[in-house]
Length: 638
Ligand code: WTA
Image (cartoon, rainbow, N blue to C red; front, side, top):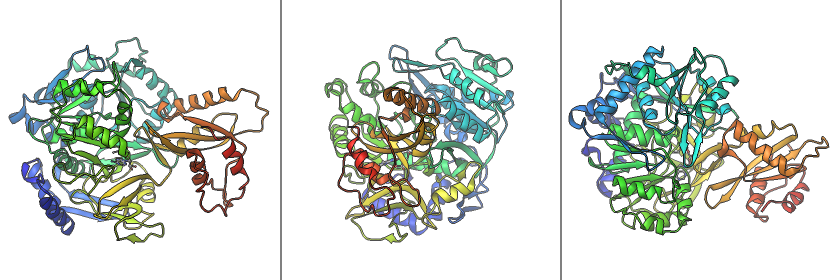
């Protein structure tokens, strides 16, 4: 991304912003025209219909994102490090993968996948830990026009099975195992279990060696990557993709048990992630950029991989955790690799802030220029700790608000340009038109108000659909506030127009930065034979942001088992069906749940009780069973 598209001061931001709103097509036309390699130009910049959620950017353009992420850098930056891989255990050596090496490894991987029968348009599920092969297989898919769907390597077998089934993948790429802190995770065993649940369709499982422990290899299905990779050619002819061909599917939680496969397409996603990476991280040629997210989430897709590589950056992939072997691992990595931009989540900041600040002081963090936050609202205390101890009060904090659905960052300060304000994501990036709507669907135009956060106009990175279910895409995002994209978040706008994201207004709870739908968790609890019904709410948690509080009604079966065992079994069930991240922090057995006359659980009341706030229940006149509130209050778990 050329420096001409970098915003350098506040007047320039306002000028660019105004231009981008007045004539979005002209604005994005210029960005796309000047910063990428295309096989063929577009015939139309944008065509859209918000009611039907039909959005086309750069119609008829031909491209491949990997030409932009890899090939075009080979002449000028072939020997520059593209990826620094930092292993879980600091005694293992880091790897420095140059653009030339990365290109070669991606081509070889694309040849392996071709040999295994993967073709353009096929879906490929990737269940890998944070090792170089994760980036390489994603890029190989993109190079050959296959659609990758990365499944976070902390998800359970059932979560894999439902995703593999939904996208119809015929191949899964996994590792024998993965390292996280002092744990070794049997990733291949989990895939085997997933395939026992959903046997159809998957023809092969390609296994990357990482932990070298013994795994079961099923004849005719399971293959070691090494056997193919060592023989593969490093010449591969890049597939020419249409602007709106699928690039990847990434699942996110929804209000039903079925995960939503957000579909992103080639051209718009590329243009948007490259443009936002350049501006939000003030990327300069010799920077060492580190985003500590997992590539299994959108943050990793857009801001570990595609955005940085499109800019020819050096990006770090870290396999481990913030506290292994000691709570200074993040600071040690910043010091070791001379990191200039560091991007992490509030939950990590809060947990590291709890440690002695000497852990930070022992390391030289003076190379840092910009520090970022993403995934959930950052509270005041965490913001200040990050600013004081990590940024040393000289690095702007970019509090970046965005979503899996938005492809890239929508609201964020531009460093050294937008004055920051603790807990505020501040101003929209060029091309983004946030609006606040009240519950009666009216737009709120004044400042110093809160409302439902919507976006008025499409931007290139917006998801195009939910895989296999376009109607659900319309229903979820485009029907609550017709003509607008509804984010599911609430926001506050201050007196100067800065935005502060206050949290979800729907039934998604963000725990340690992971989005968890309440419905899938309730579904899995209800699988327990002793459970009649359940309701999950979030409550403030000082490290995780939100903790999960479950209210569970047991069946009248004369259940004699100890309640402590039941609680354990419920959490085991959740772990098995979703993953350990969704385990409940507190479980309260109740005889009934507060319900409205129409049978809807009044979650607002359950939330208040979980928070310990017994005074602000609001209007309870529509409750069918108000007497239950006393019981629930009395037996609340501290
Ligand atoms: C929340 C992550 C406050 C928000 C990129 C959003 C945030 C959801 C912020 C999307 C932020 C993300 N401040 N809240 N800076 N960033 N969120 O899909 O509720 O994993 O809707 O994408 O995270 O989470 P997702």
